[in-house]
Length: 215
Image (cartoon, rainbow, N blue to C red; front, side, top):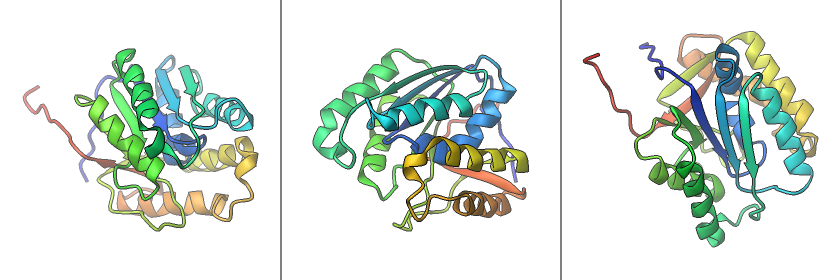
């Protein structure tokens, strides 16, 4: 197991198609990075859920998942499940995010995610952030689309438990969903932990990685 860091990390971009995507896919990594780097700039973009209960949930949740960070969150009002039909709006939002940021790391959905909104956003991000390290997070769901990840962020047991607790606490609108529970979140984290020789972990897909082995 080779351990590589992302280098100096002062600015982070995180994107989600829906409110709760970021927290489910990368909440543990956010807790880990923000606690290790007080003042970390986090630019977050969510394409749907704006203007109502979902946006209120998202703002409270990401504030909790990014302790001590300089969090800048934008939540748009694109309709859930209709990203292909609103492609130009989504593309403009991602391009505007790129124009105002120069992140050291980008967290986004996977390009092979089964959900069309997740997959579409991932493709937009990979085009807009061509020269950046983009890690594609995974979201457990009924589609059964979990694959073989190529990058892992180990999570301490305390961080894994806190992630599960914060997800339950801050997204009451999702508690009715049969897959949305502590057991599912910790179960996947345990499996990914086994794969990288630790107790818990989050896993990510990496489409491209440029190395600099001469420094």
